[in-house]
Image 1: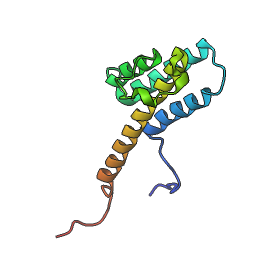
Image 2: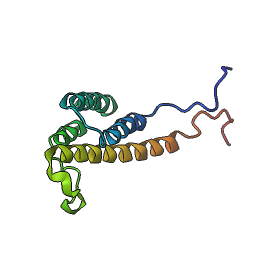
Image 3: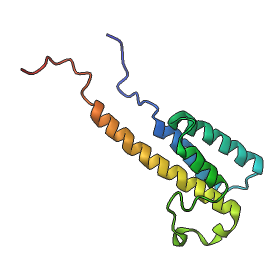
Image 4: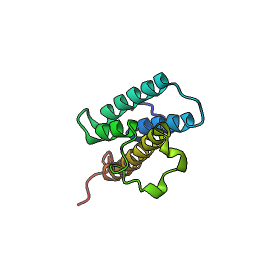
Length: 129
């Protein structure tokens, strides 16, 4: 029987999205160069392609968010936007954050359902008769 570590926590798909979201949130208070933001966007697209697949609609949604044109796609009402979001750069950051947050919540829900379904599959108990 292999020695297993009971404190081991697997790296989940939602962890990858959360890392990108956390990094984006930390960027909010810094002066960003265009190059740094482009690098972040390309990394995020790689993560999304790995998690969802290269042809998934979330890649397109994220692309619109980078352009600051994703309000209708993420159901963001005008009143929920920050007053300074009139600036396209700020608006783009806000929409990136909103899109990633929506993806994260959905992925966490799916992972919870998956965990519930898979729970108990590895039991070694004899079948009940």
